[in-house]
Length: 135
Image (cartoon, rainbow, N blue to C red; front, side, top):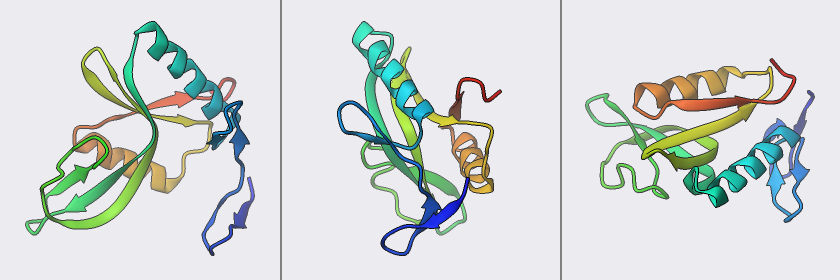
């Protein structure tokens, strides 16, 4: 996949896919997975589905790492220095546990591996859903 320069000066992958409701998705696989999750939510298998949730990865003054997500109310009062951010494709509750999910094909960037490792080490493991035919 070719990297292109977007409006506003940010570089990134330019592929986006529009869903039937007009929502933009990062790939066809992500669009299909979100559709499956919406069906699962209607059937009651999962609850509280949220899309494109950003988790901010912080360090406090003692060098201890923590995650903050204001949308989910995680560590909203703690102070620290923001190091980086991770945006999950979907976040939902399944069996009383918070699930952080990302849809991927064969390509794992170095940034994704690092951020997913941080999330896992801080108690929020990232569940990776592989696109059909990619593994």
